[in-house]
Length: 346
Ligand code: AMP
Ligand code: MG
Image 1 (cartoon, rainbow, N blue to C red):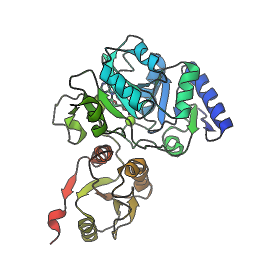
Image 2 (tube, rainbow, N blue to C red):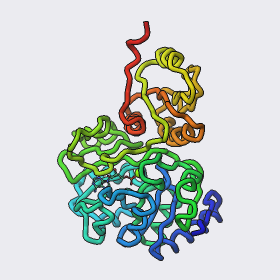
Image 3 (spheres, protein in one colour):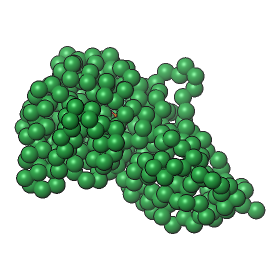
Image 4 (cartoon, protein in one colour):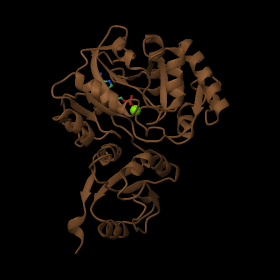
């Protein structure tokens, strides 16, 4: 299949991209579109056959449900039921934006989209490309990240191309993703509401609106053998580059000293802009700027592979605010390998 590329960064390009995407989705095909979180692989969420093509292209396990993207508040009531007032308040505050909420599902959403669950995850994105496509086509869009299952999520059209050139009919380019990590996911199918995946809408912001929320254990900890998961996506290895990543928890001096002692062939650092290290370094943002770390992390993981890194020492980020999302992604990329280095400074 020949992949068509369109650039949406000019007014004419935006118009052409939206028109082409609407046509493809109406025909039951799939397309990669930019969103403000990461690039998404899109299909009509109501069309089981079209959604099946997403799973096939990504190599995604069938039980890992997709998020349904909408563009108006009314569309929420068409696909979900039992929506608590608190969720409507959150929608008013954070939609359109990087927040996904889970509710009981209506039958218009087929089982393949929800991974066989009787709940559905819903988000209203703000990015003009996907938002216009939803508005003009009237289609609720199922869209997971536009990468092969298991590899880092795509934050540029080049990342999408690396995985899907010749595999899907359309890739729309809109430059670097604004947030760079996938949406915050909170479930209202349980009481109290449970944070399943941290993102750019923070746990602190959710608590401010909801009072008590539960933070799922799987966000910062590996699953125990046979442990039940609230979100099927947590079972799977994620965001993993080819290189083995080991995270070092400690301050700048400890990081510098540890990486000096452990330098070697193919050994790289994944660190903050301010870090000093003798290792060849890929930097993922300012030490005190978790939003910037979130925006740069996935591209940094891909760059480490391109540069042929074999072993990577990553500097562990702070975990408050958007930092919780950065911690969650980098821990998974590292297979939860963490070394405390503070105590080694003598
Ligand atoms: P992605 O499509 O890559 O952004 O991933 C979507 C995430 O949301 C995955 O971790 C899914 O397991 C999770 N998710 C989607 N729908 C549901 C649902 N109905 N219940 C629980 N988790 C969900
Ligand atoms: Mg994904």
